[in-house]
Amino acid sequence: MIRRVMIRRRAAQVAFSSRIHPVAARVLAARGQAEPVDYGLAGMLPPTLGGLDQASRILTEALLSDQRILVVGDFDADGATGCAVAVRALRSMGARRVDWMVPDRFRHGYGLSTALVREVQDDVPAVILTVDQGISSLAGVALARSLGAKVIVTDHHLPGPSLPEADAIVNPCLRDDPFPSHCLAGVGVVFYLMLALRGRLREQGHFKRQQPRLDALLDLVALGTVADLVPLDENNRRLVAQGLARVRAGRCTMGVRALLEVAGRNLAWVNASDLGFAAAPRLNAAGRLDDMGIGIRCLLADTEREARALAEQLDQLNAERRSIQAEMQQLAENQADVVSAALGEPIQGLCVFDGDWHQGVVGLVAGRLMERLQRPVIAFAPAEPGSDMLKGSGRSPAGIHMRDLLVDIDRECPGLIERFGGHARAAGLSLARTGLDDFRRCFDQLLAGVPFVDECVETDGALAPEELSVATVEALDKVGPWGQGWPEPLFDGRFKIESRRVVGADHLKLTLRSPDGGPAVDAIAFRAGAICHQELPDPLHVTYRPELNRWRGQVSLQLVIQHLVTETVND
Image 1 (tube, one colour):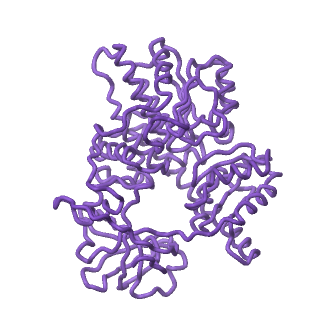
Image 2 (cartoon, helix red, strand yellow; image 1 turned 90 degrees about the horizontal axis):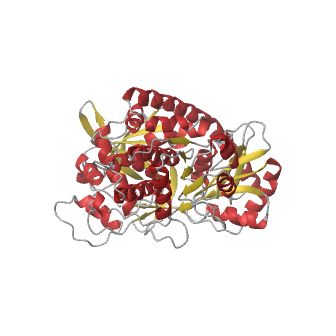
Image 3 (cartoon, one colour; image 1 turned 180 degrees about the horizontal axis):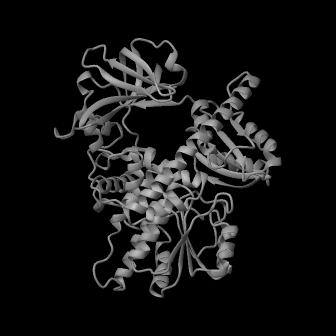
């Protein structure tokens, strides 16, 4: 648990129907929503992305001419789900020669690299379709086109100063793109391209009978969207809500079902958090440690047996990832402590490195350290064992733009960074091992004048004793989904501690009761660290998320504690 300043959201005065649970109404009003949204597909934004027309023309010609199409994904959950959406959709629309590839983190590096393109030059496809990458792959796109392939780039990452000379680019983050939302994940972008392709094929009379149902792929869209932590604006919430509805009804792809089941989730009760914290890490484990092809094959599996076998393999990889991460995290924490002691003052920013670290896990290490320090952190590992190149993954708190920080370093120290890209809160880069010290100096200099900003934890206020109920949690779930940019309800309250015990290595299990009375309620604080064994104030002021425990047909309430509250701004 971490200590943060707490601010209570101010709910707008909105008159809701009496059919809406009062807590759900208050939570929605605090997010500026005047009434519950009908997340039906009829309200989905139409396919107006720039580049869709040209991209769908190229794919239509390839499909109708029986040309080979190669889908090139990415080695994270967004790229894997997007690859599966493209392959499944193209095949459902009659494409017979659809293959897929995913970059190997060690062999190819990120994106449509020249190394990857050279692997297909002996059998060059008519069309290469990138998913969730390609906007920074200038050399790879140029090489592919010189070999005779047409290249369609679908991506959602911020473009650099130059765009690849592709035959078509579909990216909502391009300047002046007409699409109303810049929040689509990579899987969302390629889903819209498949909608546009189906529309063009329909106009040409391609479908002799019923056209394929692309909404059957929305469970994949939901998984990739939640996993990639893109803001859940209304359109993304609609895509996620529709995908979750399919999962809960048991009408999802075999791979998504298997991923959730090996994680111990009951499909009937799956929510966005289950996609983000159960299915996504298992899918990502393949790209981090092995080959994301395992994950894509799981998502493309059409039999329960095949999907389950691949999901179990992914589950084992995820367990291995957790073990590797724990060892790396401890070393990174030690490095942070040494730097902090030497400075004698708060760390402005931190670069950590170890020659034995795994490059597929450095982003997770950087994220944990960033949460602790609330400053930008970049963790580096060798690009491959014994390599002279380093791969770095950076994370930054709100208020400091990680990709812009790398832009500034590249400007101040030209040639130091070989390549980089990313978003406001996360970015990746490559540089020579000999340049690490210079990078650290430039990194520290640029952050020296950047003020610390306290992270403010926003809550939805307190729940009265009678509102601490199963009915409240069910009502909040009905008006979801929740996620990045549309925060899951978080409450705060003061409780008397009736009992406490440590479970596992560092989880604190509590029985709490409101000072105003009411029933006792179970609570748990995961990864509570030293707090497990120290004296706690009584009453205890915490932020928490209410969840439901379902066990042997019984349903009970549990509070998942997020923070100890030490300062309240507008209590």
